[in-house]
Length: 104
Image 1 (cartoon, rainbow, N blue to C red):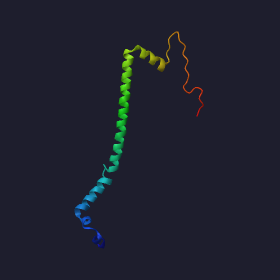
Image 2: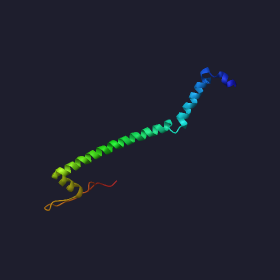
Image 3: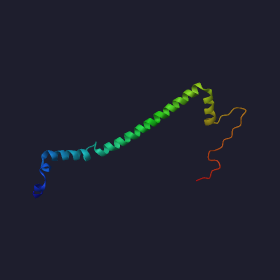
Image 4: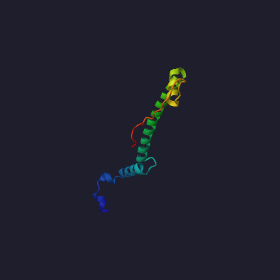
């Protein structure tokens, strides 16, 4: 009881005590506490970055598809680069990118 005499009046106020208890419960014990909200915000930022990345990727693929539909040169380039196709009168030599480099 002697401890209460040394406390300032505003710390003994019932409204301050109830607000402090409510604040502590909301800060640490609630299912939507501050730490959970920070994790959710971080996850939301990652998901938005991922969405932007995949949206750009889809747009690039869509442009490539349009080029393949209407441009025979683009179709030939894709066939040569990705599927190693060649014309009848050509020879094809495939050299790996790390050819001649020492292994790490």
